Image (cartoon, rainbow, N blue to C red):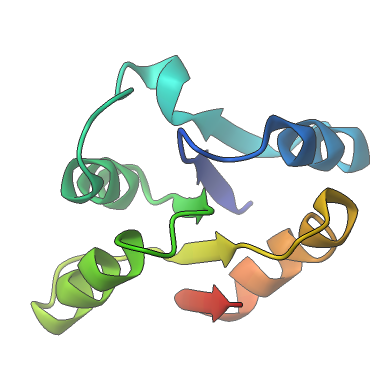
Length: 107
């Protein structure tokens, strides 16, 4: 099963919607595991150690650090960058897109 880590800045409306669609999702939030306020490389390192794809709205910095990990040959389960305007459209297909790619950038 796909394991997800939800970034601190992620819209909780989407998190609730994903759980409603699939209550068995293996999804944890950054704030629930004691990483609130940590920098992006620390979040990505934890996600890699746990084999979790990161769900985020942070298009400004997280993708650069994710690509750096890939270039350096470090583990990188993936980043799903979710930044469209509507919460109802953002949660549609997130899990399916995560399954198809290591790093997905959708603008």
